[in-house]
Image (cartoon, rainbow, N blue to C red; front, side, top):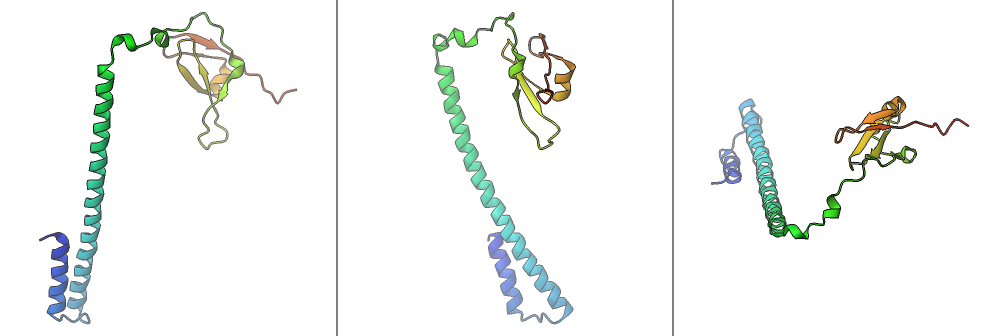
Amino acid sequence: MTLSEKSAYLKGLMDGMKLSTETDEGKMIAAIVELLGDVTKTLSDVQETTIAISDELDEIEDDLDAIEDFIMSMDEDEFDDEDFDDEDEDEDYDFEDLEEGFDFGDEETTIYEVTCACGEVIAFDEETLEEGSIVCENCGEKLEFSFDDEDEE
């Protein structure tokens, strides 16, 4: 017997016993039976959701297995070495073209991004920009820049 069936059986049993819902005991038993019905429905919904999520995860796992099989079957010759070459470390940095990054809802906090010669994208705030330099965590290169306020004319 499922939980839903048991809950319905208790409700039917209560109705069949013709318990008066006017007495304190009858009110309490009726409330308990109603609560059990609500809990049973909620639990049933959770079980259905869990099954749906499990099915989706199985599909994702199958897709990831297919991707892994594809990657593992590739020959090393298929990789283009040019895609993995490091850029020249002596390259000049153009910090005037700093891109404004993400705004996290605080209008006073602006995140800037700059790409180091090693390819690392470095994010920093206005306070770091005003300090005039930052060190790339990937290659240790010191990146220097100046902040020209466009409002000053």
